[in-house]
Image 1: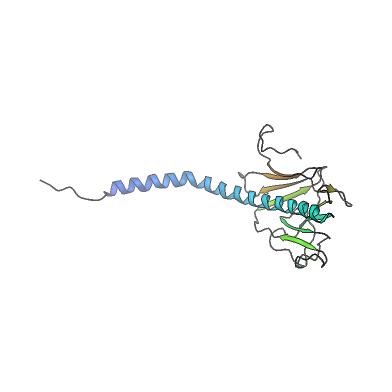
Image 2: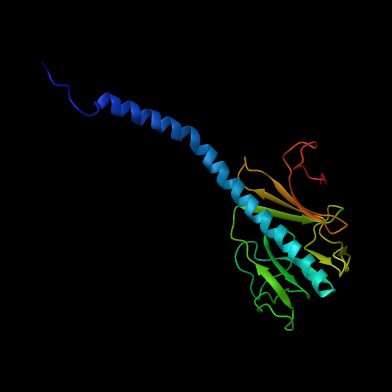
Length: 199
C-alpha cells in the first residue's frame, strides 16, 4: 500500500495564487477610490468644523467672528498667508489674519486667532463662493449666529473636489440662517445627501 504525500502540489499552489491575484486585482480599484473619498471627506469635515467653530464663538462671545480661507492651500499658514477662496487651510479669528497667520491663538493679540487649521491634502481642489457664485474667502457670524455682510458677501458654499476622477464631490453649505451642512454633489435631488444649491 502506498502512502499519500502530505502538503500541496505545485498545481494547487499556483491555482491558489492565481485566485488570490484575481481577487486583489478586482479589489484594488475599490481601495484606491475609498482612499480618495476619505481624503475628500476629511477636508470637507475640517472646513465644516471650522465654520461651525466660528459660529459657536460668535454666539459665545456675542460679537462678530469670522471663518477665513487662507494660503497656503497645502501646508501650515505662516506670516505670508493671504486670503484665498481656493484654499483648504483656514483660520477662525476676530480680525483679518492676512500676513499674521503665524500669531499664536490669543484673545488679545491681533488678529485674535481662535483656531487655525492647515490642509495636508495636495490632491484636492477647494472653491468657495457666495450665494451668487462669486469667489469669496470668508464668512462672518454675528452674535446671533447669522452670517453677515461685512463689505463682501459671505461664503454660501465651499466645493471640495478630488483631482483624480471617480471620487465623490462634496460641498459645505452655509444657509442665510447660519446652518452649516455637508452634502454630496453627485447624488440625485431626491436623495437626502443632495445639496440644496446647484451652483
